[in-house]
Length: 137
Image (cartoon, rainbow, N blue to C red; front, side, top):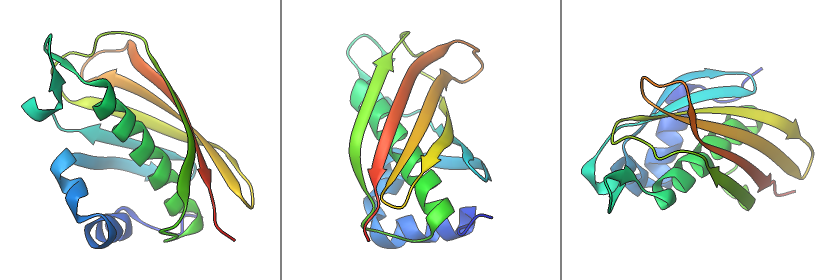
């Protein structure tokens, strides 16, 4: 059972990370162990060459992982990223990015998530990430 809804998560982020709204994230669906998020396209996310930047995609992966963890364990603000690995597979188009996250493992101290990213309207992965969170005692 989820411990936080989409509305709970949005309120949590507005309170604890008010600048996050500047990234233009939207939670599209949330289920036990799964979330789909959209990064709304904005010129600020681009790098030279007209593609979504790596740091933007890393932020999206990290946010998706954090949402999965919080939705599952509740509002633990001090859960922190301990590892983030990302493979950039294709040049993302200058459109919305769709991220699909899965909680692979939830232990008492660590949570491991997988995040796959796609350019909106396309089936090919543009990036694949694994994110590990440390959960405080």
